[in-house]
Image (cartoon, rainbow, N blue to C red; front, side, top):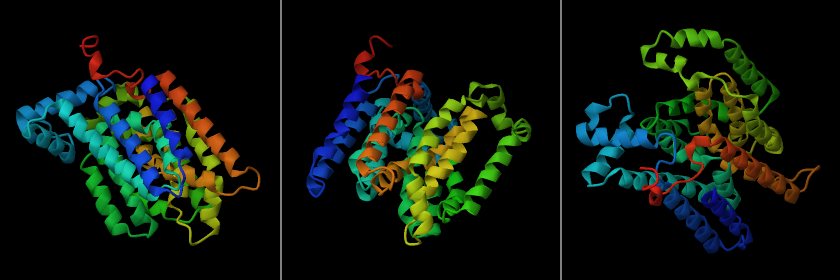
Length: 350
């Protein structure tokens, strides 16, 4: 727990810096990025899939692309490049987490209204933890957040190009093809009502989905696994809380045509998709891509004027709520990264 608590505490130091001094703000942002990169890279058997990805690297080193045809080509190529340059699995982790950190922290620095707050959310909302477990999906998400500048201007073709690039690291990134349209729609009762009705219908027709999957050999093994089981409705508290917190942002996007609806809609669709965790745990992974936009959406919502709560109170609520979620995630052992183990623990955990 201590490494994570130290990082979370350090993220607050950005609040103490003068906001008008961009040099200091950038220094803080990239200092935090370096710390996150090193923490993730020096881990050892931290993350449920640590050994799985170690095995993938070794098989790529032994056989090249032919040994793992079911793994996305982008991730295979990354493994192969690291191996051909003389690196081992540890080198792969350093390269992978460097790419992930640069993509996310550059995006935060360019688009966040409060970078220190976005870094705090990155840590407490488990995005760092995600990157230490779901490597392929984490990198796909880090690429997909760069659809944001294109979606803001409704430039779908370059946004789809980014989606296709992300799908080279995890096929599930293709969910952003339909989501790219939905995120650009203006929030409205009809829009949200139809989307909610569609989600409810899919939720109720779950037995039909199971029947379809049972006939697809590639995915049949999921039906008997732990990831096909449903989780408690307790896991909906976070997305529901984020949605309620972001209501002023959603209202602003609905009322002001000049304001992009992308961030507001991302909170709503993240909630809808995460609803399915109560049916099948594995389906919650599809919400990761929309949830990443919360790193911008929640700070935007916190800074908006509200007739009921001032900005200071809203920030306190956001920060306290996210820290409570961090404690919950740590107690549940999310992503297998709690407690943290570094390479110095290798003698203890061979």
